[in-house]
View 1 (cartoon, rainbow, N blue to C red):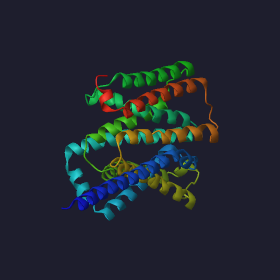
View 2: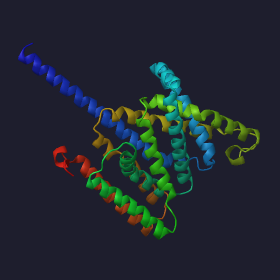
View 3: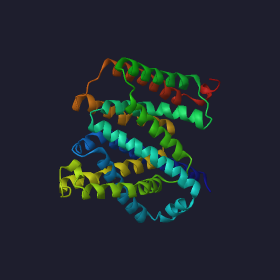
View 4: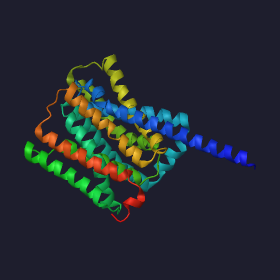
Length: 317
């Protein structure tokens, strides 16, 4: 091989790697932007009870991911996971926590608690660090410890100043943290995993909707003996798209980006949530929430700065 051909090979490889990274960045950014508009979408379903929305979200998500599995030839991977008892036990646990996350998030949106939901996803990266220390034996450096300390202080301040535990933020932050921890323990693509998780929840979901239809309580009883109107059906079917598509895009992007880049991008969604809450939904931004958000933002800056530091500089901390 000549020097010229070797140089061309290196250039081609570098160009391919750069293109791969750009595609990953675009996919991940789109995922977080889609997650960011979730409150706007679910506000359109404000007239439907939360559990009814969740049941539809699960059913339509399963329909979409099964179509994707069929078109991409992933049935062999799906069946392999279904046959593995240990894998299915982990998926049973991940299904429970993601269902809790979904119902809490939709409840927060439909009950004008989007700001609290935003705080929950802000603290999630710091929750992940803490869970990694407890369950995976990962060691914290002093900067990570300081960031988690600030997050803890933020929760204490909100509890004391508001007179109540910010349970929405905690449930969302910890449920998504445990979901990520559980999914780390099983080697399965996001599409396959989501198929199994929605599949496990499908019997309860379809059974619940059949029951509501039978007793005339569909849409909180507003439709009586009839069924959903076409615009409502389309919105409910769309919950499958807004659930599955961001997860698929995120999986594609995360495989092509540095963890630090993904970590920075994940602040996009809760920032959008906070903007919608304050400027569109007119939620009150109290002094307690301002103090808590300030501490969380400082903690996230410390956490992000620590992640961006060169490894040599990190050693010994």
